[in-house]
Image (cartoon, rainbow, N blue to C red; front, top):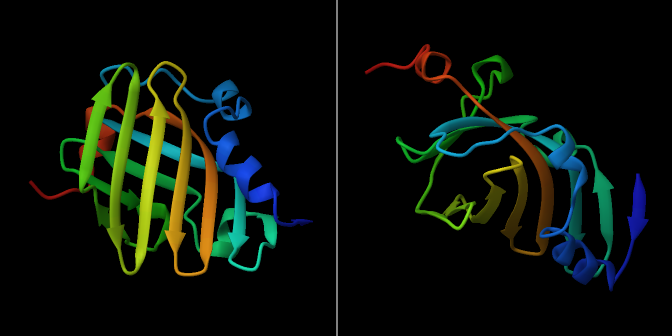
Length: 151
């Protein structure tokens, strides 16, 4: 676990736009309406200025998130056993980027996903804590996305 302080908050947030490593394992999402994102790296910064690089599970962040743009939801995979779902309150798809935003349970989130690379930069905020998640996304075939869901 890496410990950092103060100015790292600014650097971590700026890196949300520039982080390249997730792009190496992500896929082209152009035109995709359902995809799966895997957390690659997580940085948590607290209000006292302390920042920590942590594995996702230490902050209760699912390793995989299913995104369904048609249904307007983010959710955990069935295999996770968590059965968590969150509505997407704002969805924009423009200039090769997908922007998702919402809030639930005292947390606000914002996703910026590059359609060509599938690389995602995610910010989650709650009182006293900001979390940056770098993620890699891949499209899911319609049959996989619909499996196990009631119509």
